[in-house]
Image (tube, rainbow, N blue to C red; front, side, top):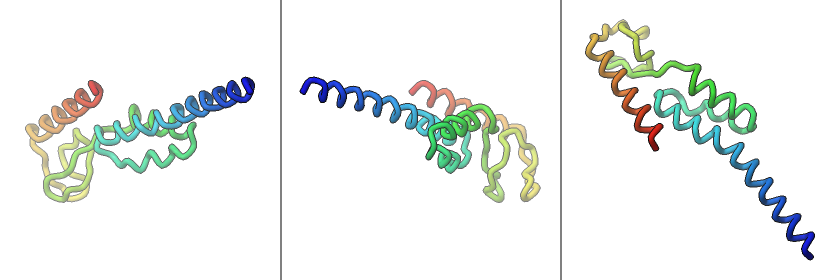
Length: 112
């Protein structure tokens, strides 16, 4: 009887560890996708635990933050001075504001 309970407890602990190793990259990946304003669909790679970690690392370190063009609403790089879709010229104030907003989102999300 005691062996059964220790086996069940060991199994549950192992299941919990696997769950967290699978869940953590998806959670942080979604968090960084929101901070950088990129597609959250990257985390579909989280179906497999290893690709979930890879997708998280790409979102965290490999993708530049984005902003929306005021004219055409397309997603462009945060430092872009000219929209590559419609040719709209961004002012330095708009660029600096977008960078400050990104920093604010990043700092508020990291503090959570």
